Image (cartoon, rainbow over the protein chains, first blue to last red):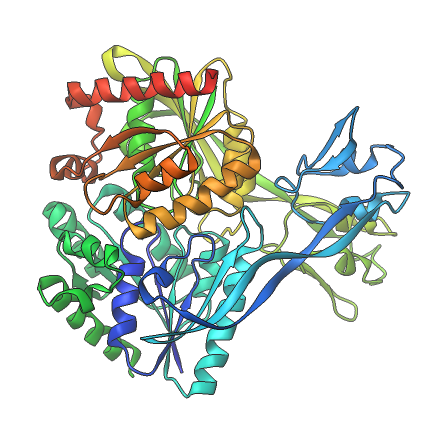
Length: 291
Length: 283
């Protein structure tokens, strides 16, 4: 079984558009939406839920105000400024600021703070017209997105084994932080979707740096390449210099948004230039994955 | 006054709006909190006058004092320590620098050292009509998974007497929440597509939980459907500005040009946006 993750660094370059098209083109594949705090793949693949479960990401502190003597030790020790004090309510834990490290619970002389399991979101296994899909929803403002990404990938791999699928495609999150790291470590191949803007190029170089840091082979695709031909040429140069295969250049075309509004992948919506480029790109990715 | 420019979905135009607004708003500060992928400097081209390392504490074990009792590993919620036989292993990339291990060690065998996770760059940029603009951004090191501590440092540079603009990271998890906390107002930049709306709804949920009033800017307003408008009406969220798709604007963006430098009408549009935000905050 092989695993491919689609990332970008910069958001909005077209990761999910490419993932949804690949999902339709690939045969015998499992899909995992690893962008757990702003997941969008379900909007195109309209999954029908088979099963779901809570995501217990870790533990968080619970303060029992009956036991609290307002000694302030927890507030003094907390490095995340997460313990607030007011005359009316006494000491209160601000869950948004809290890092759930548990130091307050260890330090409280009255044992008024205990660490309890926290539900940080929910994950789902669903059926789609492109195959089975594992996806998740992180609770609003919740922590532990990296752990949830890891869980979604693990479930995707289990599903691939069970169904005898040869490929798992992960739609990755933007950035280079903890959820991205969780989405790419140990995969066979990464596809970086970029655009010919200074921001897109800057972020592609950083996310490529992350791939090198973990020693993961990467491919590049340029979306909206004709928006700035000079920059697209620079991306070609960067790819040549770093021996990064450039597998596709997708033109700027309103058809991409129209397909999205119609809740279809671009492959299903039209058979013009965008579809042609994406189809050829998929052939190259298949070859690179050796499937 | 502290304003966050956020979105949920990436690539909707947060940095475009934040930089252009910073260029025209009087007495403004631009602070890039998207420390994983900071881009504001590409448009504002600041002169950086100061660079500060951002570090976080990590444990250092004194093997002479350690009795390998394992309490540190048991206390760590992030599995950043493991005691195997007569060896303590520290996985610094998992450490959150909370100090629980140092606190719990009965032998006082744990002290702290620091590790670099990124940096801050601070400087000034040229704004419109000869004015100057305070600029700062955080840059997370490649391979560092923890951005909130860097975002916190960027936010320490906010001057409350200024119109401080925080350029937020995408998404709705810790880095975005860290950016929004303590802001007076949040402007969400979205696009009128199913993806834009889906992620906007999640992001508005965060602002509401934090008790931060918010407004919407619809970018590329003619490129999808009208579900975002309907959502805003339903939820009574004011739409402060709509910008239609313009290939010239997109081209200028691709070259790192701030649109308000050349376009008088956009300059007026962003000034109006500034007035509307101030009026919303003072409501």
